[in-house]
Length: 314
Image 1 (cartoon, rainbow, N blue to C red):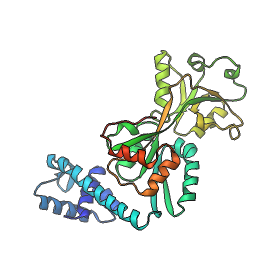
Image 2: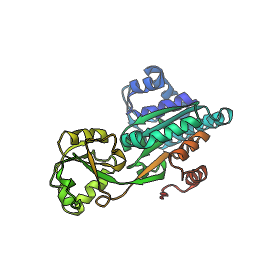
Image 3: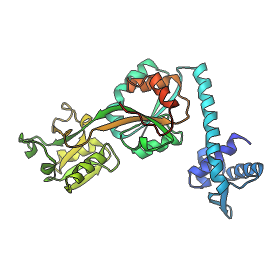
Image 4: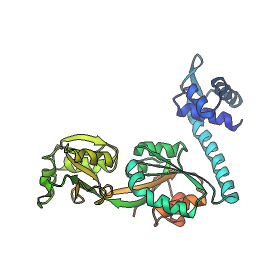
């Protein structure tokens, strides 16, 4: 039994049993992947995959039971390497961060700048995606840290910690009727075409819930993952935008005006997550605290030792 065999099995399960993709991911040949899997099956005395000719089509019952053990063995081996590097080169290495666009664009830059000043020899890799993409990158080991508002707390494979709360704002052109000084209400908003986030992004659930509670059907004419895209179409006069308050900057967004909508939509919580059971190098703890100062090493380690399913709040 060797790690290449274990990796072949894990990647086959992750990549929908497509051995061409598995071979590309492992930088080997398709016959080599098939051989590694078969040799492990022979050694274990069980078949891990259902086959149709030479193709893999699914996991067998034994394979389903064995796969979590294989993943844990590979994770432990990765943790061992991380631990060794932490002792040998405590301030040198890679740090992979997965975040949604809003976090990457508005929340992360200051933390990245400050962290780089402290750890100039750490190589930062920033990945962007939906909250579900962020969660999956953490689970698959493609990212060390994930930052998103929605979805992260829904995965038992992850440890998630609260970072900060934020609210939404409505953005409109300077001459818009909503700027007449009258109170902003959902009823007034619903009179106009709305532009906001895609479902599952940046507190969109709270926006939908607010309208639903009032029995109002909003006219959403455009959705996007990116607040900058939303603001662009608001400037073009296509509708009223609903964005995260942190996405509006008075100096940058001179062609727009913002109206606080914190009283209309529930407060949102941005969370930071990492894979349960992973080893965090010292500089990873340092980055977490740089991004969210209340999350010092002691707090993070307490979360790591807590029971699965426990949700932390601030």
